[in-house]
Amino acid sequence: MENNLLKGKKGIISGALDANSIAWKVAERAYEQGAQIILTNAPIAMRMGEIKKLADKIKAEIIPADATSVDDLNNLFSKSQEILGGKIDFLLHSIGMSPNIRKGLAYTDLNYEYYLKSVDISAISLHKMLSVAIKQDALNEWGSVVTLSYIAAQRVFPFYGDMAEAKAMLESIVRSFGYHYGKAKKVRINSISQSPTKTTAGSGIKGFEDFFSYAEKLSPLGNASAESCADYCITLFSDLTRMVTMQNLYHDGGYSTTGVSTDLMNR
Ligand SMILES: NC(=O)c1ccc[n+]([C@@H]2O[C@H](COP(=O)([O-])OP(=O)(O)OC[C@H]3O[C@@H](n4cnc5c(N)ncnc54)[C@H](O)[C@@H]3O)[C@@H](O)[C@H]2O)c1
Image (tube, rainbow, N blue to C red; front, side, top):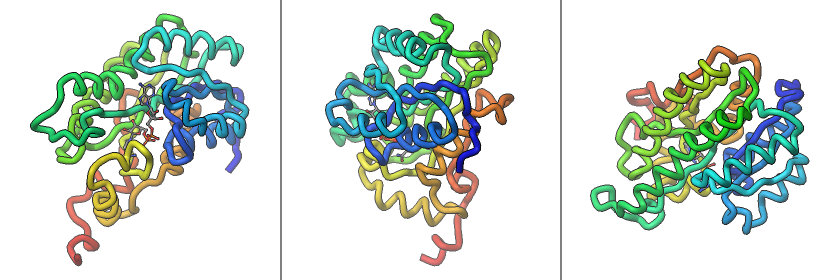
């Protein structure tokens, strides 16, 4: 599928940890569509070395950055512009982590240090990226920013722990910063609320496999894959969606508006 939707565009893609990552698929698609890309991830993720394979494949440079560190982000945006030879047209924020979930702590008994970390890594990091970008004037007019969310921002999914609050906050930052960046530079900012997807972050959630198959049966189209999520991201980075901003866009095969399915009733 090569139609050069992103020809001549320059982008920063965060969060590609391994070949299952949603960001990995987005980077591959963006490259296929003609974009020039900088990859970034937390320094600790570099140690796995997987990202280097992706970088070689898509001819991208890697700039390590902890998305909670404003210094790292300043370096990321200035170096990216240097390497790419100009301002950035699109940014993917594909970052999430909850130490409370990692340690298996119950929602009613959270560790509050961890809670702050969950929110800092999974939500405030978007604000930090955008704040650095706007101060450096690093994004081109009509640039596009996409982040990834989950429907636990709106409804209770007991296994999703403190990530529910992180996603609710993330979606709020999308709206608030979307207003300010839209007014200032016509930059658009949206979140994609994605189906459960088999990645490191997704599979780290207790009961993920069972829930994955439940969601698959409820959604009329089935769960949306990481590949189809990447396709959706490309449309949002392209010039074909210039007036879409400050939205939380469900990409879930119809899950969010289905009450019950015959597949589930029959079980
Ligand atoms: N997998 C799912 O079921 C699902 C569903 C909806 C939304 N999402 C969201 O999609 C996004 C991407 O997750 P994924 O499923 O591709 O899993 P993933 O584990 O492949 O990606 C998560 C990424 O976050 C990065 N990260 C963690 N801490 C960081 C930090 N301090 N600085 C910079 N990067 C950091 C990790 O290194 C990793 O690359 C997340 O926001 C996740 O919540 C996932």
